[in-house]
Length: 301
Image (tube, rainbow, N blue to C red; front, side, top):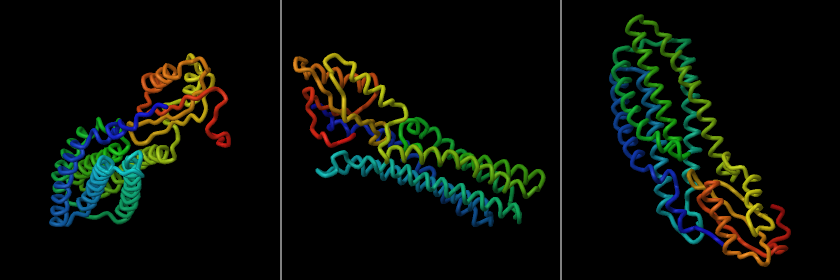
């Protein structure tokens, strides 16, 4: 039998992007406090609302970091794979936040469209420009991690949504300053809400795939089975399972039937190399057994 459990702790994709998350959290947190203070000082509902969006960024980044920290430090005999699924749960929680943001923005935009308020365009423009600068820095910090980790991607999408929110507020501020047209604010709000929804859906769908232990979308399990079955010395493949433990950590387990004369060690080496190098599965556990042997004949999977 071959396994590589000792390598699990080093393979989490999110764990490789802790520093950018920390910097983004600090920048966003400081600006959120400043925006709340300015918003209440000038009586701007738009700024207070945008600060609420920033607050969800802070919450999302905080959850991402907390999940990574627990996953990296928590070890126990019963948690044989560690706590890496917390990273995926954090991504799912971020999905809920994103849907909440979108719903709030759409409802608030509808309310303002019916009863437009007198928003101070100059304050909107200045503070939103500062917010955009903070979000752009966070965007650059998290962009690489978002390609590898669902957890980081959740935080990244919240930053993207708030960055677009800042752009929208700037546009609304310019329109208010130049024309005084109060409907600019709710129209921009609708655009932001509609932008967030499909991205939140995609993030949630990917998180659920991991939690339900569905094979990664990029891995064709039937093709993997055929590739293993075609290796020299392999007479059959059964109990093959492929899933994702957390972002950046794909897992495969299976049983290989070998001919009596076949060297089991050589077969195991070829099969493990195939799964790791050609298929791209990071964590492989295979059992080699004689033809006709089955550890659990009643197991239908």
